Length: 269
Length: 286
Image (cartoon, rainbow over all chains, first blue to last red; front, side, top):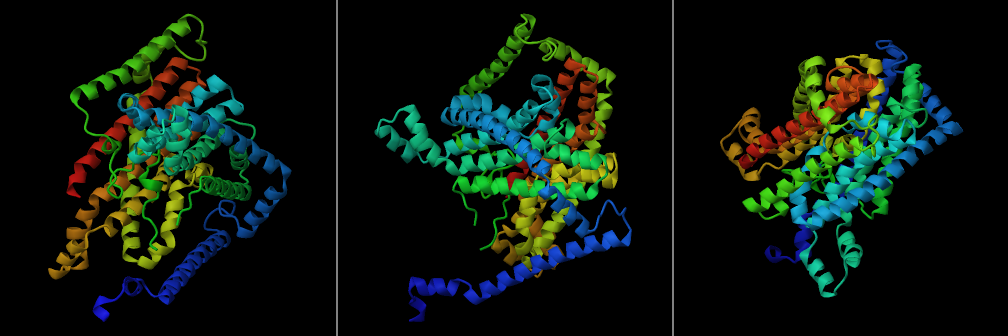
């Protein structure tokens, strides 16, 4: 009886055939490879054509050589370590304070109505404008970069935590209260596990903006760090090294983001 | 499985707020029941009162010598400096420069972003291949490319506009695709039954249906653009409001620097509120 087939029969009919899915996946992969190849060929053609300054668009092999030179230089890793340290400490300070403020605002509606609007509207302001203030408060060394990273990541983490807390299933909260958990137990056993996804996403967003905050500060005024290396390469017009540094930086950013997603137990399909 | 069209996880925007208009998730207010007048006035007074008390406390602590006045200026001096900054630093001219750069970048992200979004909507294979790349670009620290743009465009408004353009483009593309793909099938079928041409189908059916979502993308793009425009102005010491902060800081005019920072924050908040208001005005059309 075709008209009254089983659920699995109907599901099998509704789902695209496995072969077609595989074929679609292959076509997507091929198109992606074609786009990458086209970009690389266009780049190489521009480098050879002389339409742009040769140094602005250096040949790919020159960039690859600069990348290799940077990767085997111990100094590069020292600068990466400095930037990583600034971002990690900034994320810790901004993250913990953002988490606490988010928990307070999420748990108390009166507080949320009183203060959340300020976070909501201050969040999208360009944080780099606070750098002069941070220099005056914390000096030109690590402190001002850490502070830039901290204030950058504070807003997304606080807002994400507050929003996540309000979305916790009320049943879970009632279960916690029926077990007479104290405030600390409620936080560690109910609230934080239940809002893991928004908190981890907040930290991911926070990491992105902390990275931008610290690196922009390094490009503006610093004697170490990846931002300093990039602006130094620009100032001596060493474009291959600058491109190589940017590649390292983007790999660093993607890697840190993936690490947080993995540590937070979130896997995007 | 089709890739998610949202580039912010769980419907969050750049700062972790609920992304308005995303998958039916609207602003933060939706998590709360509508407050009464008393419930609104008391917390608002508490918030404002806290700020006033904090400012007064800083004033007293500086006057008492507990906070170094060479690092943090008196709030009363900062308030007095607003007049000086407006009168002597050509703030209207600088505001105009920043506005024009942001406007140029905003116009570019709107035109290019909507066209690219339409292209991805029309060509499913291209969308499947590149949508995740565009999403990755949206969360990439593209502002750090500014030295590269300095080399290509020089220390000029072009660099600032192009940085704003690159930062603001991905949200417009992604939200345009999301808006167009979210058009109800019944509306598309009505257009087909009326034998509309592809252009008519786009102008009469797809665009009006997708407009609120597209505007969410344009608004997010404009926020990214403004952040980058002011940021790059500050970094390359060129242009409008960002350069003003840099100039004042380099002259060590402390209270004026704080006043200029407050002014930029006010401009950002005003911009954010206006675009949010327009977005709410458009939303009932959904």
